[in-house]
Amino acid sequence: MAGYRRREGTRSEYCQREGISESALDYYLRRAKRGRIVPVEIVESGGACEIAVVLRNGRRVEIRAALDGAGLSRWIRALEHE
Image (cartoon, rainbow, N blue to C red; front, side):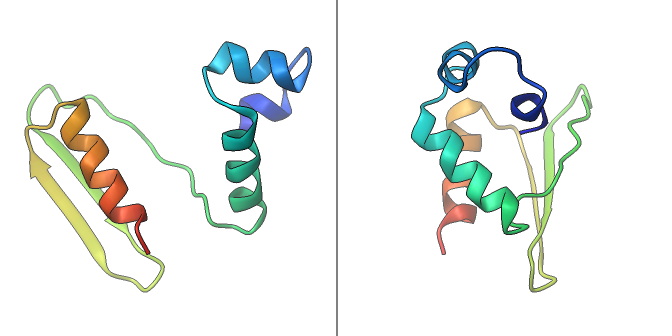
């Protein structure tokens, strides 16, 4: 999101360069404006994948498993489902 705000060129060029659709960009910009997107920090651990997500209601979800891209995608979809 910060990259979009600092962009050079058109909105379409930005989306093409980042590999996202303009509708996806709109979706995330709306969520960010409402405070529904928070920054994350990605740290290489060299071992098993560990992810901790703190939800708005204070619940903490921790995932400690070896995940490939597909496995991580499944977790993200499950967490985004409201």
